[in-house]
Length: 202
Figure 1 (cartoon, rainbow, N blue to C red):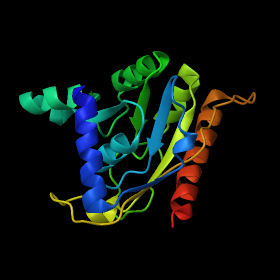
Figure 2: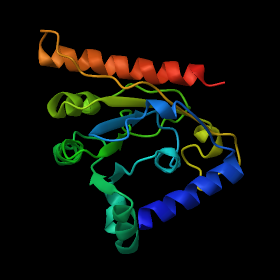
Figure 3: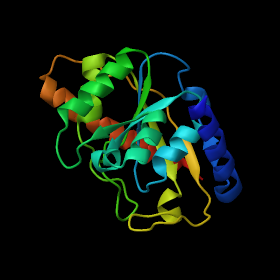
Figure 4: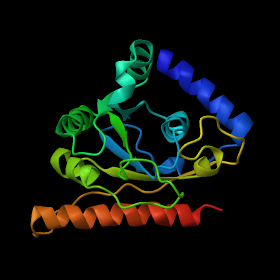
């Protein structure tokens, strides 16, 4: 109830101030475990994807946010759980695997942190690892406009057109190679798909 209310408010504000436009909604599975990945340029990105997504989304939040009592309660109610930035957080990855195995949808930013120039950075392998271990599809998403609206270092957004594009889901299929090599290849594929979606946004 609380999640849906906040989601509705966020969508309204995005529509009014950022004329948010969404394409590819038909590519979103309406049920079952799902890993959602996106490029990451702004603090707005989790709100943007969550507001236009038809299902409840869980997502990682930097652990520092969970040390603030009121904020901790708020973001946890909205589906957030803590992650240590700058290192492989096994506990956070285990939480993602637990959620998707239960049939939930989890949003992950494979770049690890926000891009400082708006370009897609290299992806880390966490998303590929989760997809392999949990046997769930990965849904690539591209966000365009959030960097212009609120880049890293800015505290307040400025009204800018924001567009979101959902691609087709990808399945991690092992082809007989070593797991480490397979994960690396799938990570490259995920990054390429997000870049393709960005280029396809008019």
